[in-house]
View 1 (cartoon, rainbow, N blue to C red):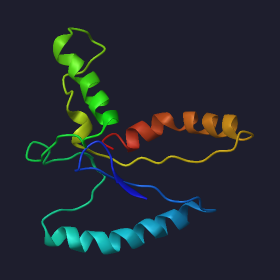
View 2 (view 1 turned 90 degrees about the vertical axis):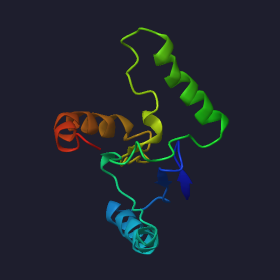
View 3 (view 1 turned 30 degrees about the vertical axis):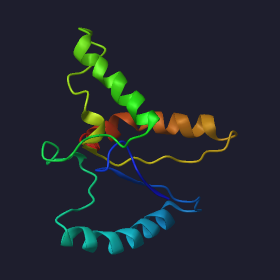
Amino acid sequence: MILFEVSYNIIEFAFAKASRIAEVEERLGTYLSMIQPYLRDHNHELQGWGVNPNWAKNDNRPVKSPRYKMLMNFLELSKAKNDPFFHDYPEYGSFICGSQVQLDVSKTSYSRVLNAFNQIEGPKAVLLANS
């Protein structure tokens, strides 16, 4: 499945279950080998490098859906409230350019997998600081 995440600048790919992560990587490679040449012909490219370096030039309005309207309304609260809970970039949701992975985990292995991911959180934060 391919869909837009928050804005029309962010595309999300969802893949069916696979027995190996490399299988998903192969599927993504197939998609990108078809999509990237088309995008490059139109001066665009799919990237996963954290904040889009051209965010100020993009049309960063969110996709028109109740879910994203609610998200943007919540982020707008930062302008009205002087609270450290909020950061100074309420529009960030429409110009990020990151990569994320979500794994299907069985109930029986949930605790073990969660603990394993918690143990790699420190190195992951250093290695993937801008993603």
